[in-house]
Length: 421
Ligand code: B12
Ligand code: SF4
Image (tube, rainbow, N blue to C red; front, top):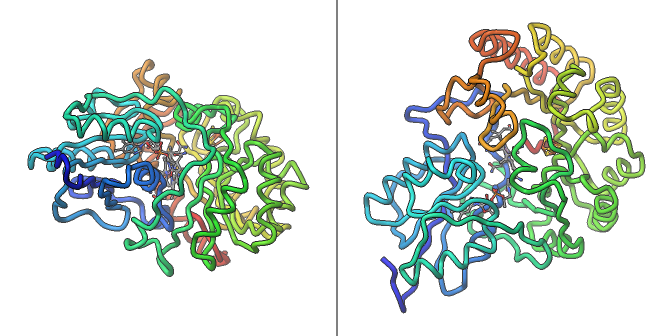
């Protein structure tokens, strides 16, 4: 177990999807990830050097054999929770202690603790070394709660080298996942981000971001792993200016507000922005108000915003939600028409999903509207709640039809050069 005096072996697993009994992801609406998640590379970076740490990322294939370790740490989103528990149970049966962490178990601590020796809630950078110390002393606690959101000054570089051998290499993907901010100033009711990372945007010093980018393979694009790269426009402009000399191509998630600031938009384009992931969410003003996004999304300006972004040569991955409370049968056509007319390059449509920890989760729970807690289905391709203006079955059927139609449209457009989806 705890090889005191000897080298401790820690295995970190990014859980995939429990596809033995799970639900397949709708073909065409999701692709294999091109770049890695940062949780485990960061934890590895915070692991003291005398500990041997290994990462297995199941995004490109489930782990088929047991890897020997003294301690196993498992991460994942809600859609990976069952696989996380399956792995945890297997490792624990073999006598290897398991720690679970990540966005899902942060909010489903009770459930997770049935499968784990320890559960970590929140951002674990500061906790992780302490947890490892406790483990080595034989004093592992059942629950660790990160009370303080870590400061982003002087964070070590995430250990991307530990996932380099998997699949994040051209032509299947690229390694260059970089974080520059955490949190988001907005608070959309379906989103976990502000609950988990806070509304106050934490900023990483720009020179440190650039320095990290320069250590990564130079010919492949950079994906900024931020939730809203332009959450602080002053910072974003400085970052884009700092990127100018390096002639990078990059993509990130950001809000539609990018189109409201000409200087910001032009700087983004000049600094190499090739593709943006935008939360367009809904064509319906009532929905935008209800999801608490009216300060960010103006439905009357969508077309104009898309045109402006296209005009500077940036491609758009547009994210839409169906099943919002004011959605009736018209929603599917509205989204299709918008994608068709606006010519956004990659439409991503998801069914509203009440992820644990979000405002809608608690709202739907209180209203008795959650009808399915099979976490495998929490991948935005299944209706797990009772919609307001249609049946769950109808929403599923119409959603699948829309995806098929959009895939044809996407194929027709055939202009995707670089995509972060
Ligand atoms: C990058 C990203 C992606 C990439 C994933 C690339 C890949 N290789 O899989 C892309 C764009 C493809 C993507 C897709 C999806 N994503 Co996504 N994604 C993110 C994003 C923006 C960053 C993830 C990240 O690296 N975070 C930084 C790390 C440091 O934070 P962290 O993961 O929370 O880890 C910290 C703690 O949780 C903890 N921790 C985590 N794991 C562990 C394990 C142990 C043992 C310990 C001790 C601690 C610990 O410590 C870490 C350090 O502090 C997050 C939002 C976010 N800010 O996290 C959303 C997020 C994870 N995604 C989300 C969702 C819903 C999806 C999709 C299902 C939907 C979609 N948008 O189409 C798909 C699923 C596809 C898939 N991969 O299976 C949700 C998850 C909600 C949930 N409860 O499940 C999030 C939170 C966004 C949101 N708006 O709510 N995503
Ligand atoms: S703007 Fe995006 S990241 Fe921010 S709270 Fe809304 S959905 Fe989440």
